[in-house]
Image 1 (spheres, rainbow, N blue to C red):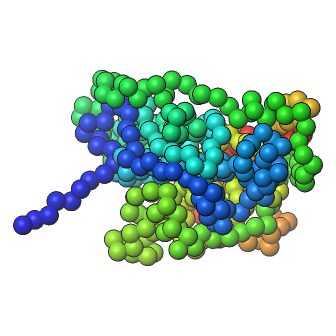
Image 2 (spheres, helix red, strand yellow):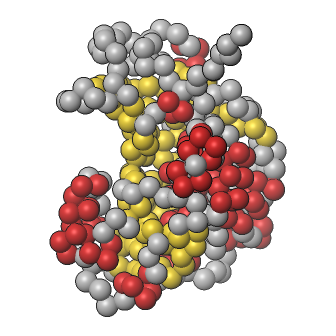
Image 3 (cartoon, rainbow, N blue to C red):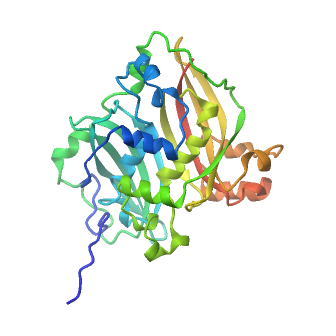
Length: 364
């Protein structure tokens, strides 16, 4: 007898724009998920650590971290969608739409928005929308993703999918915004709020790794079934790559102390520049691009963060001239970033793991 090897991920031979993929995973979270998450990704914003602060903001319990929901949205979709992709290129417009509480049951859906081959026809780029839905059928998180796949076999131009039309209801627009809830608060409880100035560059002191065991545990818990993140039998221990969502979360966690208190955030866009392996140390530096006063109680801070790989931020970057162009609010091509570093800041060459622009909601 010869065994059958199952295949997972998107089937490029049948993929169509408008096709909706339902994740097989359905997970009920409890408070241990939040605690386990914050053991790997430190948080200092009180909304996710203090019941009293959360209650004062209208929450019945301590808030689930936004980054945790983003990774559920990404990882739950690996088995039906991205397990067959080559690279995770980037994210756009990632945001929480409704509160999530302990005891909620979450599942995800992915819609293929468009697909095309590259100009060389040696690969393809697929644009997709990913949503996380609770037990009541409410959207709680959404994001857009760009992924790099093998070439799409002919015909490349395909008619829109007509299957799973009953799932289209989940993609008919955002069901709300967390900002609306915070606008209703008359005043926020007293808490330490780090002062920020437009244009300043912050070298975040925290640098920490995602260890081998942590990476394996998180990949398992969040149902990230792509073997490159955990199968050392196939790839060798040196070939394992930390998934992009975890790298992004660790870079943001490294920056959290200097940006607190963060009530909500919208990821405008992010992309990965150099891959990260377990035990690589992740740090960050951030530039404050803009600060907008929304009302008497709230401000919106636009910040661009670069996640750094194996850089001792304080000792290696202190008194170093860092190119301002690296902190453009636009999403720069990896080749442009590497060219800038090679020419003007060699200490960062091959050591930028991530670029991300966010809008942070903070008490004014």
